Image (cartoon, rainbow, N blue to C red; front, side, top):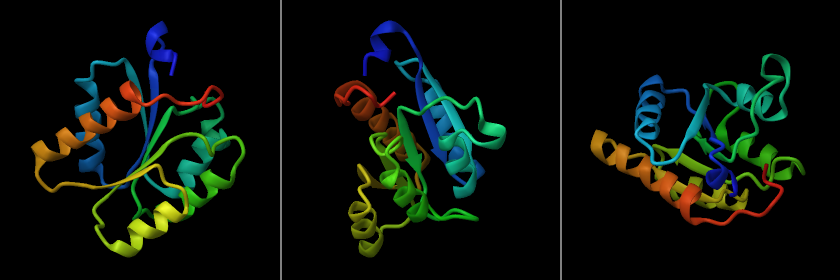
Length: 150
């Protein structure tokens, strides 16, 4: 992504209904080497409104990366992932599943829906922080994304 070289903040959308996990992710990203803006929504319907810039999210930034929990109110993460990946305007945004579930069924199903990766949230605070830093390092520093993701 060329945005890192120009100093433009990297836009991250966190879709997470657990306030504690959302706070931890925000703290981990605040210590980042990269300038980033973290937007947070707490349910699947809000996530789709944000991504489609509808309603109160009309001026929402387009995310460079989506961190998506599976177990969400209103519309679960699997539904959100399916909608993202069939939408021509959204499907190239990387989606990292970040969830407590380690069920094989969830892993297979989300990869079949074209998730970019699946990570089980660690219970331990330090491990959770390491996971968020690793996601950031990999997806925002190492991976080359196609033009047009923005």
